[in-house]
Length: 327
Ligand code: NAD
Image (tube, rainbow, N blue to C red):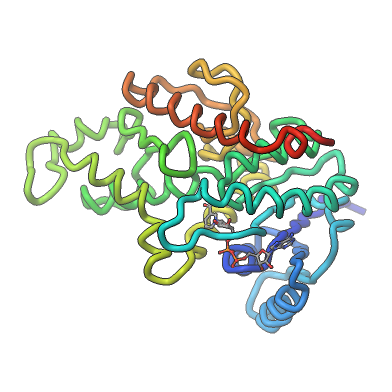
């Protein structure tokens, strides 16, 4: 009898992001088993019941509420639990609160982690918490990833696509560095049908006001960098697009897609950055982060990337060593 590899995902946190992620994973048929964990068990049970009632419309999947022992045979554990930003707060403002939440989660989870486990952190500040999980879990660096700037990259693709009037899927670009205020839009590595963005704009015009040259890059990046703040001001949380981003990463891992995604992972060497979790384009497959791609960015972008790394590094050092390095 052929033994199929189990596609089990544990999602920790059944709030806006966690529950929407589960819904998206189910709709996409990414997993064959999903386990939901939340300190508020009623919320997790309510979500599981609600979503289970749609099972007849979806690809087969078992969804239930469980505990940390479920991590033992999971292919992927996604952590979305913790405080979210309120209007006026930055992601870094969440650090102390979510360090405490992660302390609690990691104490319970770590004894159950199987050798093949991959952990994906979504909770903010995502790069700092990815590094905390890496240290505490003892897992190899390629198996501890953050959702990083996968969402920001999608936002940038959408912004450029809208600006020049093409399909977002035909824009190749990257947001690198921190998932946060110091993130860097890598316009120098952006291509449209094999042309650089500036070449494309010179040939075809990039917007109504300016038919001849590249323009509005700063505004495009600002729209992306501040997108979450505007959404949170209007409706209190962001969850749909991030759930799609998490599903994309999960699918790359569970289906060994070798997709190139700007997940957050340990960077130690490229661009002179040492021992810091941040986003660069990576090949993502069954092994987690299988290769980190070191592209030639402009001097200004490389400088901004190093500054972004420094910001994350300082935040990592501000968490008590007892938290980040205890095992
Ligand atoms: P939320 O308040 O709606 O949900 C948080 C959930 O975590 C709650 O259900 C709560 O009960 C649970 N929780 C808290 N402590 C827990 C613990 N110790 N163990 C288990 N569960 C626990 O928040 P949200 O809007 O879902 O946001 C969650 C996190 O995701 C935030 O940090 C937010 O900033 C982040 N986020 C990240 C991205 C990204 O791109 N990485 C995008 C959006 C939101």
